[in-house]
Image (cartoon, rainbow, N blue to C red; front, side, top):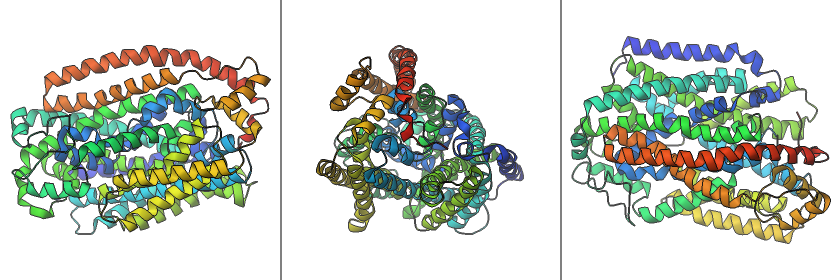
Length: 619
């Protein structure tokens, strides 16, 4: 289908406008490294939170989530926990505060605050950089596959989706290179506004054009149920047999076991803290630890309702109006292309252009945030640390330009290899992150964990993630998660116990500055001897309660949007009531106490600052 002239005009105006924005603010974004990579730590938490949410409102992930809801029904609400989506809850409750207190530029640089400057720390630093770059390339490939499939549906030229992806990445490169973090954040705010407006319009169309009865007739038994048993028990044989084959390839049929793996992995991933990508960069770019916490809260608030309005609306339109076309397509249907197919065939002129502009912007946001975070590692943690430690800020910014272009080229190269969104998604979250978890949980919570253990755990985990799909090509990456994690965990603990503990001075500085809870008693006793007034973090129980309630709260944000579009009003009001109750609870037990705790946090930080800041890297 050829796009209408109006739709093409909307898209072109957006792309030209957003490129002009990047070029216009390039001078402000390239003053120095802090400006280029963290916007000078001058942006308020709600701006960074909205920017972070816009980055997560990506086109590739949205295509995958539409497919999941179409195929798995309400049970698909649990599957995004594999990322996990609730890591923002752990961040808002305590982990973003801990991370922001370090006052560094990248996650690799943070290593110094935990392990000091010895050989173990240097090895750990290298392992984080390697993981960060591997994960950035993985996310680039993920975005590349999505934008190519999406664009191929709309444009009339009969060329490969890979070529479309190459074109869009090339256009996006212009302003992400020149503007740095300022450009990324501003463009993401614009993208969020556009996609939210388009999501509301599409929800209105879906509600007016479908009925609950028509939706029920188009789905198999169990599709409307949020609950599940050991097996998935959703059978499309009578309605759409080809869908069963694609679901079988996903590896979710034993859903009870999959859910336990997802939950186990999700909790560990959340306790490890944000991965070294755009999410961590937003935390480190906030003005203070308190604003870091509020930024993580903001992500869930601004993202879930508009995104799931869009996802659910596209799904119900596909179920009611295009099930027969999908059945006629036989085995050749790629259900990951449901999102662009429905936009292409169903939305009216003008709205199609607006939606496409918003989703192309969503791709650009994910692309921008990922590339900017990766470039920060290359410049700050490789070039400035090992090649030219005394490089002036302006030269570092130019190196940022070069690093950005290099990352894009490598990401595009790997993007040509990927065939399915689901496969790269499950490898990233089930395989690669499995190797990341053990050392990054231990670094926060166990005093005896050292730099050598961290390096060994990270390298063995990443190696396991890379080797597993080669050894077991037909096994879903999610099933490899426990083995990769266990291997990395054993290596981390054993190497730590076989090598000396970290310098007591480094441990005391870290404990005083970050104030984590966990297994820190030997360090705490040493700190108390020197600072009798020091108060340890006693908030473990409260934090865990807030995390549990926060996960329920976040889930209700998603479900109110889903049930509203489905017109399941009884369930909608139940979920809405639960949203209100959990919001009040978090207001009293998290937000109110966050304000009180922030004062003592700053006092402790100021007290610990005398002699402790030398382990932090200044720019």
